[in-house]
Image (cartoon, one colour):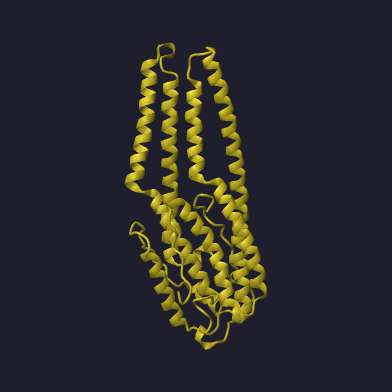
Length: 334
C-alpha cells in the first residue's frame, strides 16, 4: 500500500506453548497471553504472492524512473546543443537519453513487472484476509464448523483466489496452507480470539493506514509545491529567452523536467492513496467499536464486515491501477 506495496510492520506475538484439545472437542485451550498472526504465520501462498509483488513493484518503479529520467537527459542535451561548439557532445547526450528511455520502455513491455506487482498484491491481500477469517472463526469459517470442514473450505477458497490471476506468479513455498498458528488461534476462547483480532488485525491495519495517509498527503503537497515552483521558473526563463537575455532553451528543459515530475506523481498516486487510506481509517475505527462489543453469535459476520472494509481499499487501489476490480474473497453463500 502507499501507491506502492510496502511491507507491513511485523507484530511480535507472545511466545509460549498453546496446548489443549482439537477444535472439534469444543473446549478452548487456556492461554495466558493473546496470540495473533504475524507474517511468518500466514500461508505459503501469501509469502509467494507477497515476494512476487514486492519484486514487481521494485522493477516497475525503477523502469518508470529510468523512462522519465531518460527523457530529462535528452532534454538537457538538447538545451545545451551548440553551446561553445559542443554540438557533438550534446548530440551524444540526447541519443543516450533516448536510448535509456527506449530500453526501459521495452523492458516494461517484455517483463510486465507492473502485472506482477498488482496481481501479487491481489493474491496476498486475499490470502491474508482468508487466513484471519479462518483463525478467528469468522464467516465463512464459523466456530461450529469442524476443523476438517473449515480447512477443506479454506483450501477451496484459496484455489479460487489463485485461479483468478495469471500464471506469472510461481507458488513454490513449502509452508502449509493452514499454518499451526492459524489452528492454535482458532482453538482459543471467544474472548481471546476477539482480543487477538482487534489488536493484531484491526488496530494494526488502522495504524498502518493512518501512517500511510499522512505520508502520502505530505508527498502530494511537497510535489505540488515543487511543480508550481518549476512552472513559475519556466515562465520566467521563457520570458527571458523571448527578450534575448540568453539563447539556451532553459524553459524547454524545465518543461521536460516538469513533465517527468508530473508523470512520476501520476504513477505514485499520492493524493488518491491519501484519500483512500483516510476513508479506510474511518471505517476501521467504526468497526473497532463493533468488534469490542459484539456477541459471539454475531462475531462471524462483524469480522467479515471489517475485512470487507480493508478489501474495499485494495479494490479501489487495484481499479485505479488496472481498470478492473481486484480479487476479493466472497462471503459464504455468494
